[in-house]
Image (tube, rainbow, N blue to C red):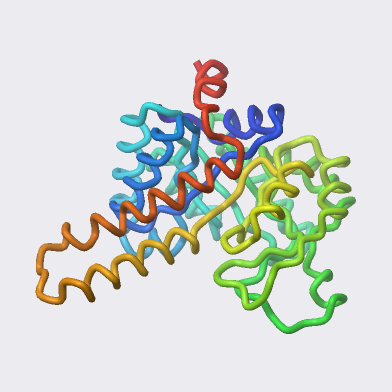
Length: 291
């Protein structure tokens, strides 16, 4: 069942749980996302990142993800992750995505607002939800001071102003997570998240959630996170299982024999995340709202 992300996130925000947003890097991982969601009877968001689009091509990614979403027995949104330009967003709208993210977090506040507002103006009339980002989420854990680290965090007052000016559907906030593997244990600023939640009345998004301890994820959801992005944990399980399968059968030349176990490993990781986020068994809640 293909849906827009906003309907999923609004229901999650009301219910105090979060929707898992899982990055799709190939057919097997896409299948793993849908299999996990159906097994858990959970709504999910299938995301296409810049790397996935560059690797497979937008047409291939869109065709696979949209077919999988429409055929799924649970609500599925198809989302552009970290869109880099207005033009790319428009291409994804035309391809049939039901949700897009425009990432202007590297821009000055006024420019980020202008770019995000422009995307909202073209996406909303066609029923596509828009996610934006305020604050900077790093690419790796760095050895920087607390002051330097917090300089990249989302300012609660700016977040309230940003949402009022853009009318965006959801907001990715920077509270201490990073993309990729962590070098140490992430330290999330829950007090900052609570202040943002008190000032902003739209669903909040946590990027860079792979590797974050389960207790911290649960606390983030209690503090107001409604969408949790996962990529690295899936890729790690997939590739490590693939390596073992190749090592155990070095003469195997059938890709299905080694990719199948990797797909199963990814499915197991995603099912675990769905249960962690509290979205297991929530498909009917979203389905009733969407219909």
